[in-house]
Image (cartoon, rainbow, N blue to C red; front, side):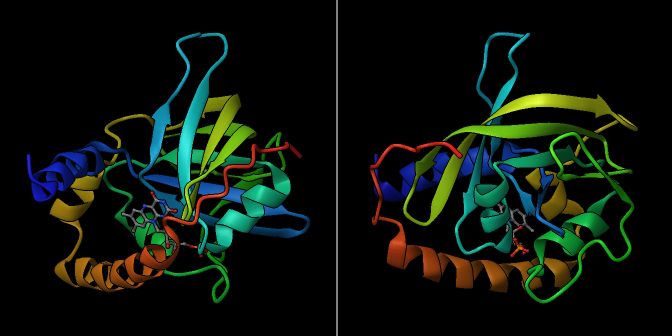
Length: 194
Ligand SMILES: Cc1cc2nc3c(=O)[nH]c(=O)nc-3n(C[C@H](O)[C@H](O)[C@H](O)COP(=O)(O)O)c2cc1C
């Protein structure tokens, strides 16, 4: 198998992933971002866990490391606007909650009022990946809100307007260039907890 084919196989995992909004609070401040790197990681129904990858350059990363908590929301297929709001801009430059209804959840993280569903999470371990951190989280609360079909990355690329895809592509290229510089600088020290 060639390296090119290996990358193509790894890419299939992207397309199948649910598109989620992750929100977190640090003190009075709140922020949120889009992610597609969330997978289940517990076979014990009564001990639900997820594994979520967050890039270090994102403003949200600092919120999660400081608070040790976030809320993860599955989006419905008709919520493309939320992907743009939370995934195309950084909270360093924009209040992403200006036009988005939310309440404060049990972990202190914001919970969006309109989504497919949400799960409130606390970090129980974290692994450095150079350019990103893989957070193992415990799901402490959650609810199906509207339900229905949830959005996948395939859906986003199929139904988002062409100019959005271009705009996101440009942002992604910058992130990839940044990641390339640090992706192999892995800190193997175990996570100490909060
Ligand atoms: C469709 C889509 C998928 C994304 N997937 C991820 C992801 O899995 N992990 C991640 O850290 N960022 C991901 N992002 C990028 C962040 O959502 C984006 O950089 C965001 O603007 C960061 O906001 P912040 O700086 O306010 O935290 C994705 C963005 C989009 C639009």
